[in-house]
Structures are given as C-alpha cells and as structure tokens.
Length: 354
Image (cartoon, rainbow, N blue to C red):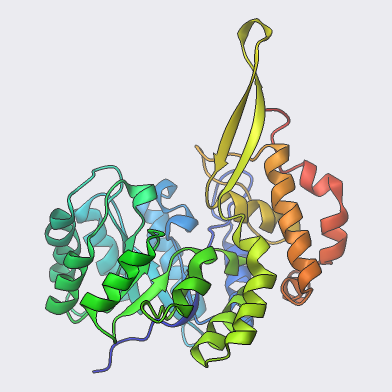
C-alpha cells in the first residue's frame, strides 16, 4: 500500500473558546468550514496551537471527534495526540485512529526531558506497537519541549515501522533537515513546522520539504496552500511572490515586545516579553472578526505594543496582496479594511498595562 501523502498546507487549528473558557463549538465548525472552502490540504486539531496542554482529555477527544465529523470526505485530518505521558499518548492515538483520523501527530515529550533513545523506544515505538496500523508523525520542536528526537532515531523508526514516513520539523536547523533527507531517503516526507522557514525548506534541494503544518493558515489558508502547490508544480516565481506577500504574517507566530515595568519604590525597567503561539494568531483572528476567543491560562493577552505588531503585520500583508485576507470577509461577514482601521477593536485585545 502506498504511503499516505503529507504535502501541501495543513492548518494547526486554534481551539476557539468562549469568554467563560469553554470550547466554542459553533466557532470551531465555522473555522473548519472556512478551511475547507479555502482548499486546504488538511487540518490538525489539538496540536499545541490548539492549546492541547490546557484541554482536559475529555475535551481533547471531543475536539478530535468534532473535527473528524466536520472534515470527513472534505479534507484530510491529522490528530494531535502527543503528551508527556506515553500512556496518555497511547490512549489518545488509539481513540483518534478508531474515530477515523488519517494520521496522528505526536510532539516530543515536553518537560520530562527523555533522551532521543528513550523518545524512540519508550514513546514513539510504544505508541506504534500499541496502535497497530496507525500512521504517526513525530513532531520535533526542542525550543518548546526541552528534548529532541535525533535524526538517527527517526531513521530507525522509519525503517522499522511502515507507519512512520513523515516528520514535522520545527528545530530551525536546516543542516539537521538535510541529514534527515540523507538518512531517511527520497520518499520520506519533511513538513515545515515553522511558517517562516517553509520557503527555504521547500526550495533547498537537499531538504525538499513537501509542505507545511502552518499556524498562519488559520487566517490565510488559500494563500499558503497556493504557495506550497506552486513549489510542488515547480512554479518558483509564484511561490516566491506569495512568500513575500505572506511574510509579515509569518513574523507574528511568536511576538517579542519590549514593555516597561514599574517596580517597587517607583523604579522603572524594560522587559522583553515573548508572546508565544497561539497568542499571536488568536489576537489576529479576534481582531479580524474570526472565532478564536481567549487563550487558556497561563496564556493571557499581549501588551499594547505586541497587539500593535500583530495589527501592523496584517495591514502590511493586506497592502501587499489584498487577496490574502479577503476570503475572511465572505466566510465571516466582515470587512477587513474596516476592522484593521478600528482602534477600539485592537485596544480591547491588550492588557491595560504591563
């Protein structure tokens, strides 16, 4: 049987919440409809962009079930089932596989800090042994997990298990990706896990990434999908044009903003706050009138300077190519230019003070 194809653009879906913190199921369905109408290759519910660490396991499985129901026959689905507990990852992967997910995505075990050998033997292989027939995509992102599946152990997994034929790469290490291509072979699929590196990864003949699992596709699925398909059809000029138009949005997945703090006894200092995914993309979605809602604590809001960076990025992308954000208007009944111009909308998204 031919290996499942991981190509094109896949959306790491946000999980929209209501103001009281419960899941916004109607908003979730509307967001998936938007993805499908935009021609996205596939969706990823409850990855880390979907705030999986703060969902209860019952919510986690419910999100996957709702996504599978909404996506069935319309787009492909990769279910996020990673954990820092192998037993929990097995339970989640078994549920997603039985429910009809095309594949599961497992992030390296965060916080525990297992070695690469332990990741291979006690986590990935344990899930593959416990869930026969599952297609599994390792997700390597050491900046968030504090550990890293080595290329060598990835190659051993791919050799020993027919269900491992792709990896989500978010190490930022292009040399590592070149070695992945070398050790895992031509047919192995490398997916970008960093929106801002997708162009380089797909253009590099020693990497030959097949696509991206994207955060930015929550707001611009059609444009990112077109960019990846342009690469896959050897239309480098169109891919480059779209990359340049999208690049302001790629820069807000993580936002660094310098903010003043007033310390005891009236002393002032400046702190650089690093607002991590999914806060940036949820801030943008809320600003543009899409279902997103708040993040779950401990994530909160950006400062005014952070929100300004997100808003300015959207303005610049809209200036470069209005078609990037235009589909949002039809799907959610808004006018992009009006929302980008309305200070009240954006002021309400930030903390009053740092």
